[in-house]
Amino acid sequence: MPAAEVSAEAIAARLSALGLTTRVEEHDRDTSIEAEVPESLSAESWREALEVVAEADRFGLLATSLNSRTLWAAVRKAVPTTGDVDGPSDQR
Image 1 (cartoon, rainbow, N blue to C red):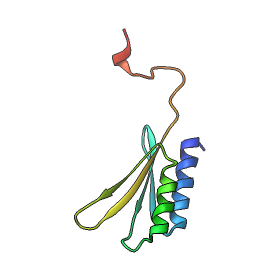
Image 2: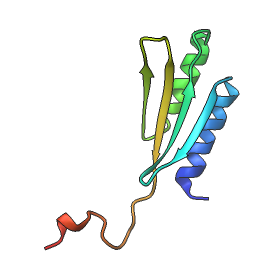
Image 3: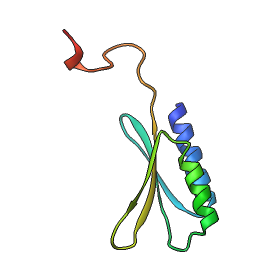
């Protein structure tokens, strides 16, 4: 299993242990983790959740006017070591 996937699964497992429902999705460049955050989440659990997602390459919180809150994190997949890394625009 690739390192990004292992890291993303570990983040999802730790968020689940806090009682959050998580979703893990594979994308071309990263693996993302999302967790719905209930209003009843304690301050201590919030701190733990933030410590968990801080281990990812990027993280944030999406909040809507309908009181929906989604904590998200993304773990970058490894960059290819050979081949066309930058794409055709970099070729001359």
